Picture 1 (cartoon, rainbow, N blue to C red):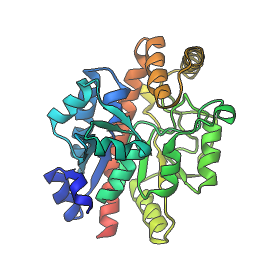
Picture 2: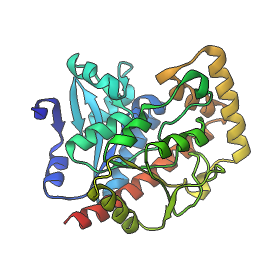
Picture 3: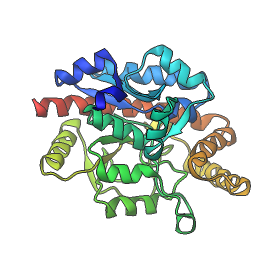
Picture 4: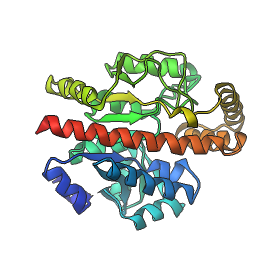
Length: 306
């Protein structure tokens, strides 16, 4: 029944059938996270890094209503250039599919499609979370509910620092989602390695991480796991500088009435402008770092499952 909705790239399908390591990658970063050509260049490099580290990349999107698991270079180029690609979360999937439209998948929708295809590891930039002022607006990313229910391990550089990190951690704790620091006891805050908040647990190797994930799912404890992988030190931004830029961007968004799914792309673009492009370079480097760890984790999980 599900097959009619899917288009899985041959390379990915064969890897899944043989129990080889596969890493899911999202497409919102291509269509809504970075400017053209940087978005396409980054997406292709991320796939290259996954391959160089021994796993098969599976960039996920919806094209002409089909759930695509693994994209060609031409399809990535299309996502990077087209102005008609819809930012797609859980609620949007049936409409994009039924109307045969193009959709770029967020963390939530990438997790859904990855899980349906049988992919257990997903590498991204940063997860969504509880937005600042959510106690009044109730603006909470669907990513968090997906993490509560869907069995996919998400490698990220923490939650995007434009969010309320304290409330995001509280929300994840309520729904039983472990937040694990890779080589750190402090939650990284996307552009920086520090946030002032502690993670639930620290792990120091992909093997240890794989053992924890396997135990979680073997025990029937459904839901994802957040693997917070700090941005490499040489690429992190000055804490005070990025904090000031985010506050300025948030003020601008409030004045312009930017809400919902438009808020994150607006804030990231605004922060990039304020920092003179420095934040974009940090964003690219943290994604590369997560792709590498995602591949290493997928390899260790595949070993355990064999």
